[in-house]
Length: 307
Image (tube, rainbow, N blue to C red; front, side, top):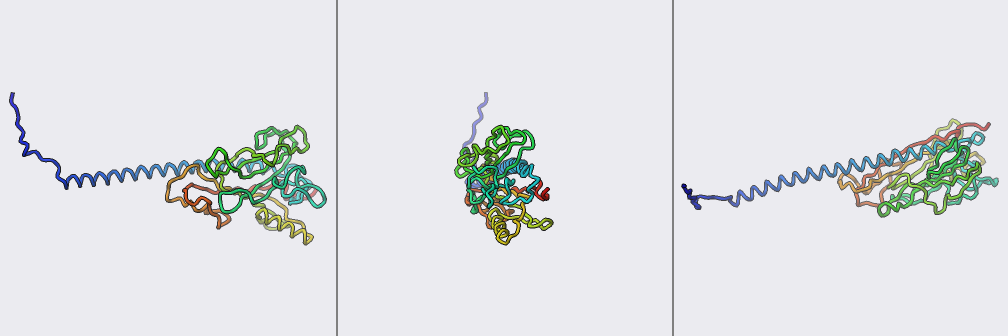
């Protein structure tokens, strides 16, 4: 058996320069791979956040619009819908000057009607919309309770803290009266501390605009809730009829569940497409994805004439 003898003096390793070059190349390749990985992760988060917003915004807003379309159902004798219309579809006031009520029942409180100055996660307060109608058929209200045909339904939409969410999370909820099996209005379990059922989670802002016309055939104008009340009161002071409400525009700003970790998302603004250019988020650090969803609902019988 022949033994091969290796001359150690002829064995060579890497030089210091070669090690430094290899190390540099490894760092460059690793950095490129990490950048690709992080870019893919951020892209995935953006896609997930966009899908969340689309599911919540589109389906949630359509759920609300479906009920708002029932506003004023059965009202064919009081088409001039305003803040003093007896049992009007949009509940803007508790009582009228002649002792009648804008709502089905006088048990509705001042905090339960359509109004502004509610919680929000932007620098402007949110709104609350309260509606009422007669059920056109057997149906369920927004809290999942069975309502029989011809029963009165009253519902309010508002933002409230979400106990199942993160700190400061707000959710769009709906509170409805409890059906009592008769056509008489029942306001049991409505308003006050009733938290209602959540329709849309992580809503930073909720806004309602009332579309109104002063006279038949005039151009339609959209008013904030306080502005409409002001215009209606000014009209009455001048012995004129307040503008009739013919539609409702709903705006919501929905927020993603998790941070996108993307530098392309500016967390200081709520959205670029709102009617209020001064709108900004109260959270100016976390890059959540936010999106504005808007829908407009025409009210039935609102343009008719008294029979």
